[in-house]
Image (cartoon, rainbow over all chains, first blue to last red; front, side):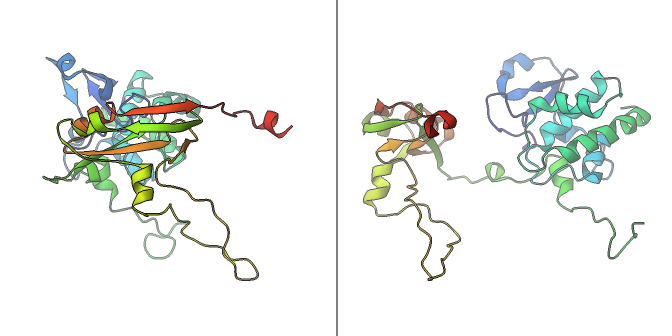
Amino acid sequence: MTGTHVGCDTSQCGACVVHVDGKSVKSCTMLAVQAEGAKVITIEGLAESADKLHPMQEAFRDNHALQCGFCTPGMVMSAIDMVKRHNYQLDEATVRRELEGNLCRCTGYHNIVKAILAAAPAMKSAGV
Amino acid sequence: MTAETGIGARVKRKEDQRFLTGTGRYVDDLPLARATYAYFLRSPHAHAKIKSIDVSAAKAMPGVVEIFTGKDIADAKVGGLICGWVVKDKHGEPHKSPPHPVMALDTVRYVGDTVAMVVANSHDEAKDAAEAIHVDYDVKPANVDLAARIR
């Protein structure tokens, strides 16, 4: 599986974010042995099928929230965690603050923020 | 009013599918069985003269293929990084540009300035060997306050 990326290896860029037992974690700073017995979800595990993507993935596509795509898996995983922690209620300022741990060189973040704001209600009605 | 098709219609990108599902093929994902890996040794000083670089211990380390320094590049007459687009003045003369060596030659001018390149059979072997390179720096003061410097 190559979806989770090594960006900086120093826990600054967020390209490595995965979910461990439901929480977003920067995997570059976690030893594999620490995940023993835990449920780990990576970007590959989000979509139901190639045709049915997670609402967050759909929102990223609809809102042109990616260009080269390298930061995208980490962005999507962080975003899903952010939506859930804020109980599907987000405003722009909150999203921008919560994205501090995810760096993007291509997009300027504007469409990523739009995508996350669009995905929150979509996730709620989809029950995910 | 956005059209459904044709001019003015929204067109979704084709590449997003693989990037969003973690099935992109970036260079690091390509299965190149016999590829070597490069690791760059970088200056920890903002401004310093390089007095010497000793790569002997590093070259002997496991998996190391070769090690290059700025001097090796200069000796091989490779030349500096060119400006891709040369601007000419009204007489047709090309713009003047500084040397831009590929790696630092005598002076490092920022933290992270490249000092040596280690090529090895794996990333970790290259990184381990880079840590065995001994660089003798003559550390100089660094100007980080532009306003103070101009005065």
